[in-house]
Image (cartoon, rainbow, N blue to C red; front, side, top):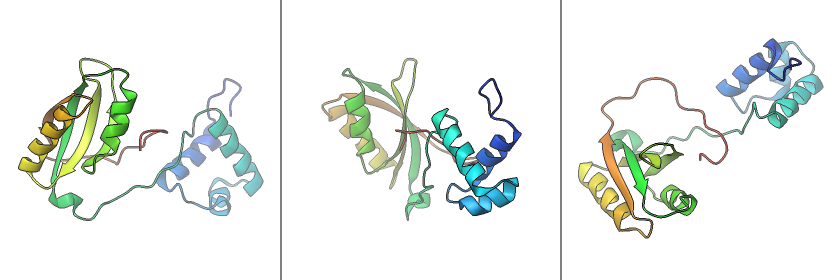
Length: 155
């Protein structure tokens, strides 16, 4: 860690390795960055304390996901505070990820349904919920890029 609190070159190597494989052993990570295992563990602890490492996650693939209708929902939540509604959304079986956002909408929600009719049923169910979630569906035509990396509380 540099004096200004920013990760140095070794920290960035550690972060890159963890980003690629959060389950890497400390021994293997130490070998890759040419440090002792205790030195790597100390750097990881410091990176966690400083917020550079916000958590570890599993990259989940649910059987059948590729066969369904993937969509992003732009949602406005009809009650305040929003936190209970966001928890409700995460409990829905079609929901894969929820982002609380600033702007005219309160959340962006990634969903997978069996088809377009099920997507419509989902948006109707959300609107009828106690949280009065108005969701505009944006069906995904194609996805490009790497899987997202998220912080704590994101799923």
